[in-house]
Image (cartoon, rainbow, N blue to C red; front, side, top):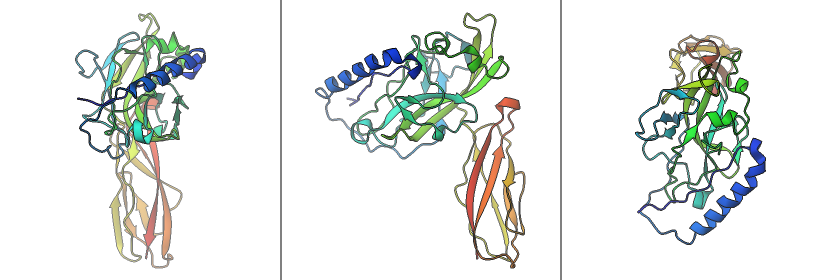
Length: 307
């Protein structure tokens, strides 16, 4: 037996005339469910998942769906047992969908009713997916809709076609996926994929789309630097994931005298003993091998301790 709460999703803010009604439905549904919930076999909510994998899929078979027309129905699949860092019932976590221009940091978006930037997944009537409740106890993401479409963004929700096709009106590359947000609207977990919209005179709404199943956004995976000793050779390799390899690294600003950063991410050299001992901030950027508007760049700052 599964112990689940399912929330009624809300429409995007640009359809504000109907938001109040859907919010009322969601609240009423939640109250009704409180009288029928039963205990289940559950485990603790998962650790945080950032920049995980989301896949656009066929609603019937759950197989990856690589492309479609503006009205092609789809769903989104996540890794098995994908879950928020906490559940809705005890921790206030909710699930939201997002659609932001490529290069946007999902962590910079807040989610309170709707994403503060961009759009999200909508069903065939334009109903936005989110905020949705998780399974009780586990925080597992449940009941992802099977009737998602892209056409309602430009029909029911009045998003200009030129906004989707932001590259000279011919195409637009977007990050899309699902997030878990806490009670403050901050992202605690996310699963990402990539959607490219293309103009099409043969489509009734003027565009088609292509998905890159399970491709997360570019981000730096190195979290810290090992300490160094002045006058002693030093070497460490920075790492990244997502985007389109291979990656190219660059320093931002200056490095302690004697260190250099290669284009492959190797930070190496021998720091001069004339350099004072202490903590130094190392700023870097990494870019992927995407072409033109598809190219991604990520930044990171580290503290290097020299003795």
